[in-house]
Image (tube, rainbow over all chains, first blue to last red; front, side, top):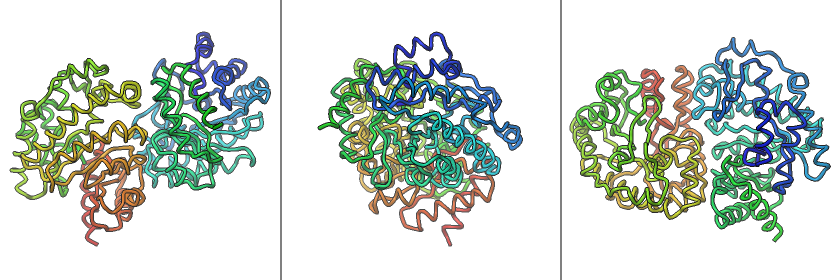
Length: 320
Length: 320
């Protein structure tokens, strides 16, 4: 449940004085926001508060967050020259505030629950850079892959190198696990994924220190599960558009799964929430290696009491 | 390959004098546009030119097509009262021009290739009515399903009854096969699909006269395939985000499959197009019951020569 925040009153209070980017760059505030859902909701882990596009700012592409519209990139990366012009970025110099946030959040958590670090996967970050912002079809990205594979490869190589060091830095700062968000990779065919994404994602995961669990997540990936597993990760994160039991059976017993209640269920009432939680837990069948989660972030209009009710239900039903 | 048109010069010429809605309501012109791709591209079937939202106009919800933004519905259907207020619509009175288009197109085709009629599936039409236009997340639709299932059911019952009569009318007018476009159903969990969509889609398909093939299509449905098959259809249409061979194996030998080249491949060059076509045909393995198609409509920026090249490649490679 990323976006620890938007539906929590204490998060919105912090945002009254800090923009999204300023919040990410203020470790004390970002650590506070990271810990808030643990106190309010009783979840079993905290996830770093940050944005997957923090990397885009040091790349000099003109990142801003338009109110209510998400990220806007003023100078999209579309050509070979655009890629070559991107500076080589060292996470320790470019985003030191993220590592400081991890340190402060770990201190504030005092070992109560583990802290999950995270990064956008190379494909998803690339898709923002190429499209210039959020997209429905990711046409320019798919076009680059098919029509200019060398340009695509050059872009993915740069992003993979950064991402591996970025996650390693979070682990060094104290993150107990990391999650790789390939949020928009579900727009691809399995064939395109295996040719143009898998090698890069694999290189990121393979570069991480052993012993730290990696959760590999995407949305709309019901057609990509086996390929995502082959790219790596101890746990595959599922969105709600796939049956959990069927997905786990396709993935095999070698990986855990995380998921996958439809976040829109939390817009309804207690009976429907109970039904939804029970269905997910039933799909997992009580097997070790299941991390209950929503299939994507909490929707901004969700009453936080419904999130709390869901967490309590998961705890109660899991104990039975 | 629906949207017979946007990338064809002769289609754009027709659109210079007629808006989308006026074109649909002018059977001579709509029949002409239906036949154009057969002449230009050498495809093996024609598909009726119409819009899945033609039904929305007689419902009195204030349908317009904003330039470049797709359909806009001025008065979205969100409450029980909104649903009750919808008039009962008889296709023969509400959209007689569609049936006349089918008749004229059949005459113009002179049996050269079959004509495929079509309709939006109840879910997809409902999603437009509820959201008020195109959507990325379909949140209001999912919210209605979970939070107001009775309202949702009432809406789906009305749309299903209309859709069954609408498709039956097209068959009576001469359509050789029909395709049910559940274009946006891929936003749902398999559980929500089975509870809130399947019974209605099944009722539409079950009401059609026997002997006329039904193609049942959606996008982003890699997690829904078995449930869509259970809803009905002789052929399941696949988008590009699932491996064709794996999908067919899940569906079983009782149905055919249609698909599923990524339309973005047609934005690249001949070598990549050839590779893509070969991969789809290889996935189908020469089995009877495969209809080669794109995984969704032709993208507007596609050079028509690339579409023609693809059609020729399919014919050549299939003969081998």
